Image 1 (tube, rainbow, N blue to C red):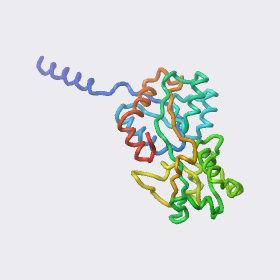
Image 2 (tube, one colour):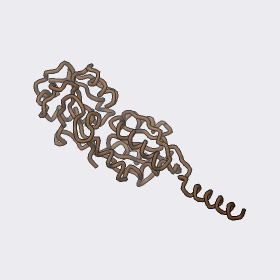
Image 3 (cartoon, rainbow, N blue to C red):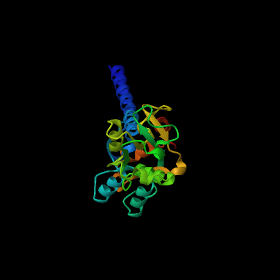
Image 4 (cartoon, rainbow, N blue to C red):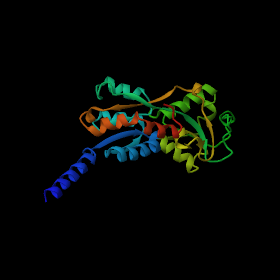
Length: 251
């Protein structure tokens, strides 16, 4: 009887050892351009750690205002480096937690296979009824689009044809639904595993706009949440990096 009892205790102990630590939940504000890769990362993160990342997607500028006004976010993945730096300066973050998790690329894209040429010459000809762009005041990818047009000297050609999205996700929808024949979107929205997934595109060279360095930061509300610190650590790991690169981001 004692042998059976000892085996049962040993089995129970093995089960306890194999169980993951108590799972927690983390509230994450994510820049809209990073929607697809972050959904994939969150799923793998939960599988590997047991923690759940509750994701909210939107424009970096709007998240900044919400965080200032007490929104319950614990981790912030911005579309730039300036906004998290502002939160650092306002002491709304955990000091030393900020880092660049991805380097973004902007692309001129159309769902029409033949509309956008490989050199983006359509921007110079103005041969389209509308051009979609994210709000440059709140969305870094929108600001990159504006800088690109200014660099090419075509701003006046398009100023009466612009269709402005609240964020890069809405901007993509304008083009994907045909409400705008082309637009500046994030490469990650139309790229997977080394190729443009549909339509035609010009990948805008970085020389036409400021670098899009996307920073992540631990907010003060997440200071004591193990899932928040675990997620930021996970973003620096090989599995997350593989997903990030597969969507066309640099590291």
